[in-house]
Image 1 (cartoon, helix red, strand yellow):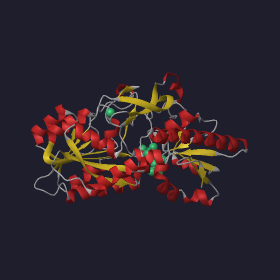
Image 2 (cartoon, protein in one colour; image 1 turned 135 degrees about the vertical axis):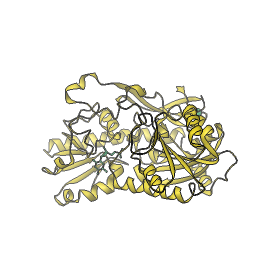
Image 3 (cartoon, rainbow, N blue to C red; image 1 turned 90 degrees about the horizontal axis):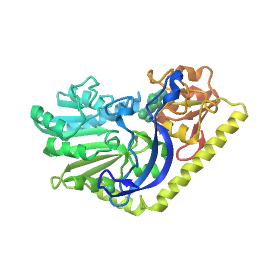
Length: 398
Ligand code: TMP
Ligand code: ZN
């Protein structure tokens, strides 16, 4: 049992991944002896139903001191953020002199797009990275008051793949209370618990994802802090996310989509013990199947290479015990990961060019959230007789 960070209720564990490294802590092959590990386990709050890690990974241990920087180099994601920015410009940001704040601004695609439209914008990010205007701080009541004093209230506070990482989430709401205009909104998108359970996307569980949101838990949390969930939208990216819109209490009428999703979650009995037990059983089934497949392929003398040294793959390789003996290297387009080895599992990371030199027999797709884009780009691999191995929602070869 641990204490819920939202409501102080009791959090009951439903899956324990044991000791795990930090997912972004790629290591120099020479320095693998002093890696940091922390206990990764997930549970559900018995009072507010929020699903969360039992122990947050300490921020100071991470290779970054700010909000994790997400840059997948994905064209699909670039377009996704551009479209959202255009939609906000047409809706929430269409009044006189609008102002948008983004918490932890990823590639900066959203803020650059609104900047190019001449709209006032500010990224809130402790390390102050990025090509847009930045306020170097964590988002909380203190930084919100500073921003309010210099810029005035915000029409939109936006965050992608960031709110779920903030264990001390009350601080976000305290900041919103200060900074949001009376009719302003918080718009945020994160992996969806329903999708994770449905598709056994267990590898979404790693140090940087602290919360696993459902509409019902988010709605309850918003109310607790004086706000309300007023809209939800399914997003096809990253294996299934939801974009939530939160407004001050009694300022907006919730859309039908909110009522529909809440009803669906009740019907699905999303966080009931049977559902969580079924998830745990499915994860161990994937582990058995994947280890069996990789071991058999090795015995048959086939070459298997990993594709995408994702944060998610830290959980897969470390919980399953997959190292360079089964997957000799993983290719990844991120220059800063190349030449290093993966956290905990120590699989060397090599540039994508090495994938075709020569093509392996099988590619284990760790970046399955980018499957369509990657498979289209690597069509020549299939043409040369190569096959993809996927493990979500179950182990299958394509
Ligand atoms: P993400 O799941 O956080 O977006 O990370 C995706 C990882 O996969 C990132 O390390 C970059 C890598 N990647 C490639 O190597 N090739 C690609 O085509 C894409 C889209 C991602
Ligand atoms: Zn709770």
